[in-house]
Length: 450
Image 1 (spheres, one colour):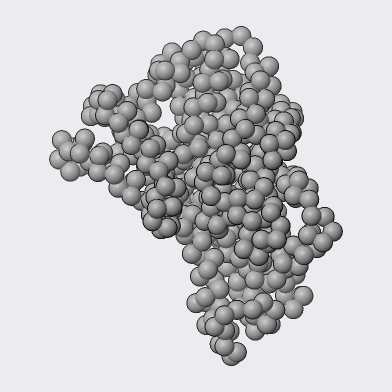
Image 2 (cartoon, helix red, strand yellow):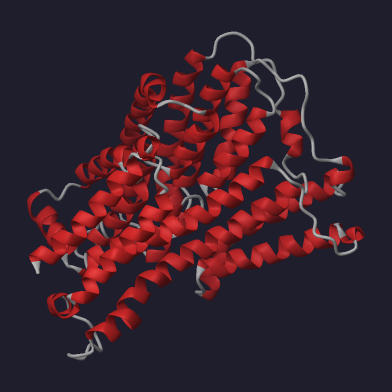
C-alpha cells in the first residue's frame, strides 16, 4: 500500500517539476497536468480495494471497487473542478463580450499620460479593480494589451507588465470571484465572500501600496507614449459611450451580486455567473441588432490570446484537480495533517511554507493540497480551521504573493512574461525582493488585524 501511494506521489512530483520548468523544457502544462491526473487515478483504481479499506466510504460494497471509485469518488473531484471551470467560462465570456464591444477602449485614451508615476498608479488600481471581479489570468492578458498600446519603450513595458501582474494577483486574492484559488476555497465551503474580503482587504492594499512605491524607483523620466492609439470604434462597434458604460456597470454589478445570489438561493456560484452572462449577452445582442444576425466579433489580439489561454487553463485545472484528488484518497494528506497539528500547529508557518513552495511550483495544486489538509468540517475544535478561519485567508494571501516571487508560481505570471519576453534573471534582480518586502508588509498587517 505504501509503495502504491509513493508511486502516485512520484507521478505528481515529476509532473510538478516539468510544469515548473516550462520555460526550459517548453512542455505544455495542460498536457502534463492531464497526464498526471489520469495516471494517478489509474494507479489508484488498480489497487482500489486496498485504498478503500483505509478510508471509510458510505455505500461501498466489497467486490465492486472499480464501479464505486468510477461512479462516486472520482466524480466528487470532477464536480468541484467543473464548478470552478464553469464559473471561469462565464466570467471570461462576460469580459470578452465587453471587450469586443469596445467597453475598455476608452481606457487607452484615458490612461495616456507623460508621467511615469501617474501611469503606474492608474494602471495598478485599474488592474486591481478588474481582477477583483474577473480571474487574474484574463485580467493580465487584457491589461498588458491595453498597456502595450500606450507604452512604446520595451524596458518600461517590462516594468509595467510586472506591475500589472502583482496588481492582478493582489486584486484577485481578496475576493472569492477574483482568482481560482479563492474560488476553490468558496466552492469547498471554507470561506464566505464577505468575511473573506474583510479579512484580506487591508493586507492586500498594504502590499499593493508598498510594491508600487518600491517599483516607482525604477521609473525615471517621462513615459514613452506611442504616437498612434489603436481603437475599435467606428464601423467596428455600434455602441455609444453611454451604452458601453451601461454594459460595464451591468457586467461588474452582476459579478458582485453573485455571492448574494448564492446566499439567497444556495445554488452553485457558477449558475449566478451564467445568469450575469446571459444578461450581458442579451444586452449586447439588443445593441447590435442592426448587424442582421451576423456574428459580431472584433478580432482583438487580447481576446484571441484569452481564448487559447482559457482552454489550456480549463484542461490544466481539471488535470490538477484529478491529480490532487487521487493523492487525497490515498490518505497521505490526512497523515501529514495529523503530524502538522501534533508537532507544529502554527498557521503562519503553514502560510510561509505554502508561499515559498508556490514561488517554485504553481500555487494552484498547493492551494488544493492546503484545502484538503484541514477540512473545515472536521476541525471545528480549532478556530483557525473552521469556516472563515484565519488559516484560509492566510492560505489565499500567501499562495498569491508567494507564487509571484519568481513568477513561475502563477499562470498569470507565465502569461505576463510570455507576452513581454521577461527573463527570470531580470525578474529576480528587479522584482523578487520588492515582492518579498510587499509580502512581509502585508503579513505584518494581517498579523495585527487578526
